[in-house]
Length: 131
Image (cartoon, rainbow, N blue to C red):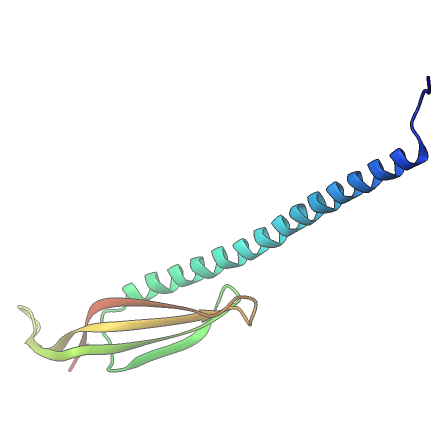
C-alpha cells in the first residue's frame, strides 16, 4: 500500500487549482471595473439632475435659448425650443405688460470627455418671454 500522491497527481491538481484561481481573479477585477463605470454613470446622472433643477427655475425663456458649460467635471449643453405656436398673454393685476407663454422642449446633452458615451435627456417645460 502506497501513502501519498504521485507527481502527476500533484501537477494535475495544481493545474485545476490555478485555472480556478484565474477565473476567480478575472471575475473579481471585472467587478471592480464595472463598479468604476457605475460610479461614472451615477455622477453623470447626478450632474444631469442638477441641470434639470437649474432649468426648472428658469421661467423667462428667449426663443431657442441655449447654454453650454461644465458641471461636476462633465460638459453639457442644453437648448430650449418652443413647441407649437406661442400664446400672447396680458399681465396680471398690477402688471400691464404683455408676455408670450409657451411649451418648450429642452434637450440636455451631457458627456464626460469620452469616458462614457454622451447622454441626452429631453424634458418639456412651460415658460414665457416678457415683452
